[in-house]
Image (tube, rainbow, N blue to C red; front, side, top):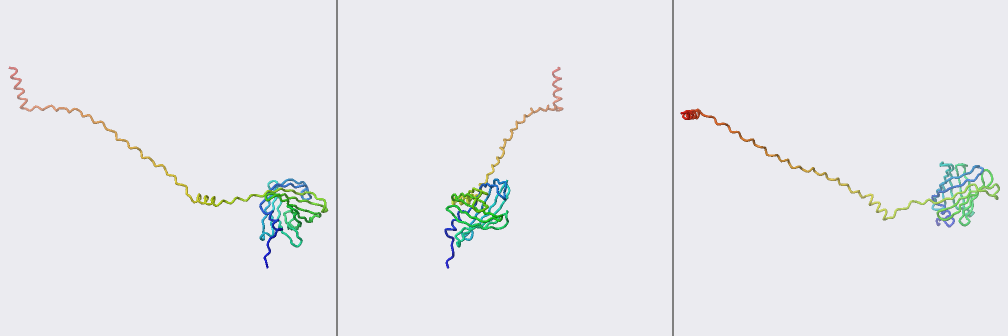
Length: 227
């Protein structure tokens, strides 16, 4: 027995897969009488090898999360219909929406717990943009918009090319060259100061001492001179 594989009907659901963000307009309704504006993030991922898509929805108003939703999209081959099972933080209970693709627009509808009907539409505007519209009706014939949103796909981070990875790895492994400390110059040696030659004091002549003999000779000379 061959293992079932996703077909063309499942591939259409793949157009919803991705991370999305956008601005929303909420029209006055029984559950939101004033209406207003909001922003939302939507994360859709494929599960079960492509047989279904899971959605995580989060709405913010005034910077705070005010509404969360969780949905599962799949294709029911028995009735040839697309199905979405939905749970949100407002009702707390699950609901089932059913419908079909018409061109690039998926429209699903369901009765509301309060009475009346609700339908949702995803209008695909290419691989990176889509418009969402939620409408309500008291009788299933006259429809009024309840909420509109326009979403853009968030681009995933680009994978680095092999050459860029190598360059990044080389740069990470390459140590920055150590900075050489400037060698401290030794202080220049000063030449020793030359000492001026000491001036020699003139030698004093010691007077010659007269010996007794010289004294007698000197006296004798004086006497002779007197004569």
